Each structure stands twice: as structure tokens, then as C-alpha cells.
Image 1: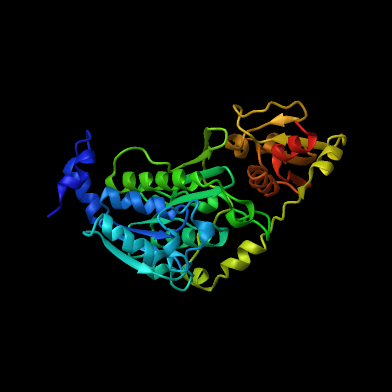
Image 2 (image 1 turned 90 degrees about the horizontal axis):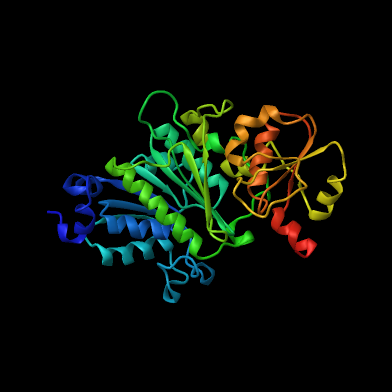
Length: 364
């Protein structure tokens, strides 16, 4: 018998009630990666009353994790994250079933483990794992809640919602071209502000609750972006990418995902501020600002501003010139340059470090 006293504050919400709580209790959610994103997502899914939660992570707790993975403490250093998280969450709600997988996801085991769950929470921090989760979910018709963080920026979306007709949007529609080796830094390399994974991971839990109960409006079809340093957010409306093809099970099992993500087809050159200043003097170079229109500071040295949220629909309007893409921190500009490169053969560059690096070097 469900202990309603624990959940009464959400059960009294209009439209929620016993029916929604029963759906949560019957649900099974797999969290892949019990780190900066996975920890807050886990805590709030347990608090919401999800009945069965799988925890997959082969990593151990390190001291450098503790500024953002607040489920852990000094006494947990060296212990497996999935085991530690399960033991602590049993103290919060002993009636929830926890299944611990103290190893990493691979394309040899992904279909077996993901197939046993209703929804997957992506708590990983690398492209190889995200592509693998996506492809497994597509094959199994499972929905997964995507999350990513780097430095001061985070993203959330929902992929592969199978309701309705036709192919569902998936992660490859957002990133059809895998990044080349060293093109995108991990949190270990680039850093991340501690509070950001907590915000994004909690949002992932909220998306999962909406999906499991059928209540509210999810982020399916939209990529939510949040910049914690500027306290600004924006959304990119997603659409099916014409170059994405469905994978079959044999191809999935035989794929080498680490190779795919290390040696992507589109290696976008990143230029430094000195090279960028030189390009500004070249008449055949088109400088494209892909920041959203509300973002500051305003600049007068770009040739056009087409926000990332509008870029896919505007690719045909770009001139037949070399293009240098700029954004706030040099993250979105790489994604934008990859998208542009899929449609044209002329050189495309990204300003490394973005306008932050540019103004820092100018002493502004």
C-alpha cells in the first residue's frame, strides 16, 4: 500500500492526485551516469516516488566530484558511485527498488539493460555515450531525457518520444555530425560551475515526471539552453534532419562508438583571437554571430546575427564566402559550424573561447 503521506504535497496539486502517483510508483527509470547530472535527477525522482530506479556507473567518487555531486562526501571517495548512491537513497525511501550496475554502458549490453526500463536519464559527460544511448533508445522505442553541461552553460531536451506517427526526433537530429577528437572539451578539461549540474539534473527529473504521468508539456522538440552566469535562457526548436538514417541492431552491436566520436567527418578549425582579428580584415570572410538576439554585449564587427535557434532554417541565405562563426564562449559556434559545413564546401571556422576570449584579450 502506497504511503500517501510522503507524497501528499504533490498529490493535492490540481490534476495530479492518486492516478499520477500510481503511475510514478509503477514506473522504471534508468539513470546512466551517477555524477553531476545523475545525482540531482536521482534525488528528485526518489522524492517523487518513482518505483524502480536503475543506476549505471563504473566510476568511483573522487574529491574533485564533491563541489557538484552533493550526494557524496569525503568518506565515499574511492567507492563506486552507483553503489553509494543506491545506499543513500534507500534511507530516503526504503520502499523504492534500486538496481545497481557498477559498470559502464557499452553497445554489447545497452539493449539488454535499457530494454528493461520505461525512460532513460542521460547523466553522461561525453558524446560517445550520448550517441550510444540515443541509438539504443531508437532501436528499443524508449524515450530518453538528455542533459549536458559545460563551464557556465547547460542544455536539456527530450528525445525519441514514440507517440504519434513517423520517425521521432532523436539526438542525431540535433548533432548529426559527431565532433572530432579534442573539439569539445569535457567538464574535466573545460570546468563547470558547481550549481549548474544541479539545475540541469533537476530539470531532467522534472521532464521524466511529466513523461511518466502524462501531465504538463515536455521539452520534446525543443532544446532548452541555460547560461547560469548571465541568468538567461533560450530555446531552439528542433526538426528532423534529412541526413539522419535509422540504425539496425546488427550495426549498433558492431559499432565502435569511441572511434565515431573521436574521428568525426567534420573537423571544424578553431581559430584564436589573433587569427580572428586578421580574418576581420579579409573581404571574403563572413563573420556570423549565432548568439540569441537578447544576449550582450552588442558588437559591430559581425556581418550578420542568425541565432542558433534559427540557423537551420536560414542556411540557404548565407553568402558563398568563408565563414567564421562566433558565440559567447565558443561552444555553440562549433555546433553551428558543423551544421553549416554539412551544406557547403567552403571553409568554416569557429572562434575558440568565443567573445569571452575576444574581450579578455582586448582588455575590456
